[in-house]
Length: 147
Image (cartoon, rainbow, N blue to C red; front, side, top):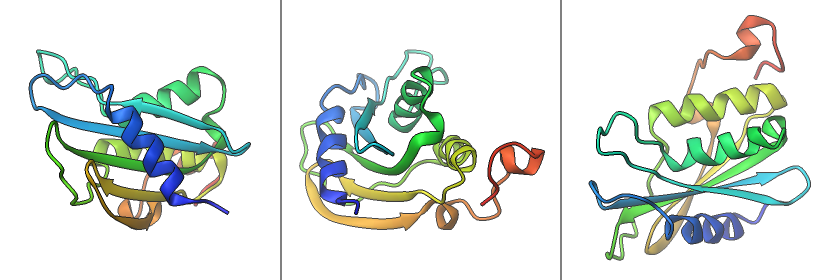
């Protein structure tokens, strides 16, 4: 059974390492893997803005770099203004939804996505397919599982 609070706590810890000097908006992501381990990532901004990386993308790329892209079971995401106690949940942007969909389809899963604010607050629960309906991915190309 997935404990959303564990993923959210790991995402919050990852957000403490966000490199967000321009937006001052820290985001952390935590991926629950099949074996119960957690892979994290934090957003990484760049002065050119367009080259910035979202926390979910960093975490997913880290899982992929260790050969574990297909093992992602669930995602926890937190975010908010640095130095503030934002409690409103944030959700993955469209690009990150697509990145997560790639991993989800490769693993043949519909990922659970847990969202919260950097400063705490409630935890929203979503299915990736609800956040990205009618997604296009590897399954449409005959690769991996199709959700």
